[in-house]
Length: 329
Image (cartoon, rainbow, N blue to C red; front, side, top):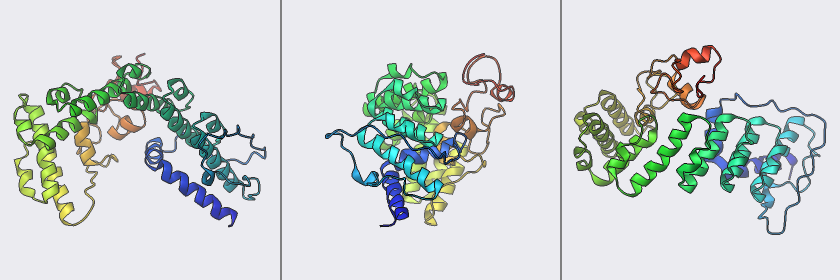
């Protein structure tokens, strides 16, 4: 088999193994931390030897190494893929450090340390936001809110605890537990909608707060309208943003199209925005001068609070001053 074909097979194998996590990483990262592959002319250091019980996955590792590949970029890709394959096969983040691409190296460190439950290992990740996400994943897997306290960014730490509490509320069929969650994360609304879907419209009608009741009914009727392709359910929704989105979704389903819409052109799907409590018809819900998608995916800040770190400075102004909008000055 030709070397190039082998490389493609290696890449496909790893991408299938890591598809969901890798795709999410690449979407959020936006290329800000991607290092341009460069052929340094140096020989890659020999990786640690696998033990007999390491669970190595031979298809991820080239039998003859990558040295015989003439093209510099293809050789570097091979070396990076092989390092990732060895890291996965041996659950050893040491291999990740051999990866030259910064974003791919961070991805490797995140995957391995998250699977190991190693918070200190997460701190070896170069990009701060991905260090925090790594810790958040460990906390979620352990269902331990105390781990969330290891996260440096207050807003991300709050989301971490919200996710764990939302899981508990859904598991216990506890609508009151959903309602006490902070609004600035999609875990709250998804928790409410999950219980409404499981228990019917009566689960919403027992909610005393009008805004929360309308969020519950909006999510419930939108879900029913989507599953039945019946727009009449949309007319029972009180919240305008939910009603407009509901009608769009039904029309898309009837046309056999994917119900994906981005009405405010902020690169956030309207349905996702409803779950986040952001406005699907405004690209800057909290009017702080920073688009919702930038807050969520570039800086991991609160799109519902114009002053995420609570230091009296608006997020947009702090960014212009090159301040850290996650940490009070």
